[in-house]
Amino acid sequence: MIQSKDCCKILKGKGNKGTTTVIFALLLTTILGFAAFTTDIGIIVMERSKLSAAVDSAALAGAQELVVNPENSGTMAQEYVLKNQPEARSISISIDPDNRGIEVSAVETANIYFARVLNNSFADISTLAKARIENIKSLSGARPLAVVQQTFVYGREYTLKEGAGDGTTGNYEALALGGTGGSNYSGNMLDGYEGTISVGDLIYTETGNMAGNTHSTINQLINRCDHDPPCTYDSYKVNCPKVIFVPVVDTLAVNGRKCVRVLGFATFFLGGVTGDSGQADVTGRFITYNMQGETANDIGDFGTYGIRLVR
Image (cartoon, rainbow, N blue to C red; front, side, top):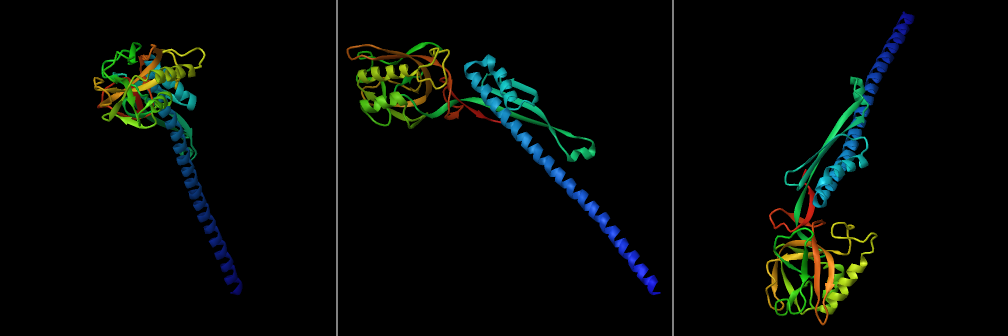
């Protein structure tokens, strides 16, 4: 009888061990499955993030190209996608009828692990981005010159500052931004006003012709452009010193130092400064330009834009 009981104990022990082994195997399979599933999620999230960044960059680049060269916008967007994510495919690009927006989408295939249990080793990831061009509402870096609201024509030469005898009494289209006097005026002309100007702001005009300061600073700006070949209004380097932003105002028919209202911003490519005997006429050609700044759609369009992702 003792031997029989011992035998039963031995058999019972072996049965427990076998059950534990089965349970352990099932638990291990489940744990490995969850680990693989978690890995798949991580891979998909990472690849989607990379593809999304590439598509976002492509939409922004395409929108920037819409500002200066609309015909090349789609090509530029596609190049950006492939440059940042060479594995992308099914790239689709559409441009809004008003040439103020571009939408980019793409698909990429990611290698996954857990789904192989279901005989599927791949997952398609897709993403979409849209960028819109909007009018600049606020910016810093404006020059102390102003132009009156009007319909500007690309490439046309405009007078940005009148010489003595050409302006309203005591006012020759110069601005007093953040202060008054020749030194403040020269600093703003050379480096741009460091403060922020917004549509709706009231800003002061500067009194006097500022002929000497104008000749000196405009010539310095022009000489700072050392690009080869030299920049022109229709072919220039980004951030060229000859590209300047000026406020568009409601009127300049004021005498002396008076307030004028900002309606928007226009961009010009400096032509030069002429005049002598106390005169200083500044000219520039109107261009369209994209820059950093607060944007809005409910303000006047004067050719200076900001770009933002809307989707």
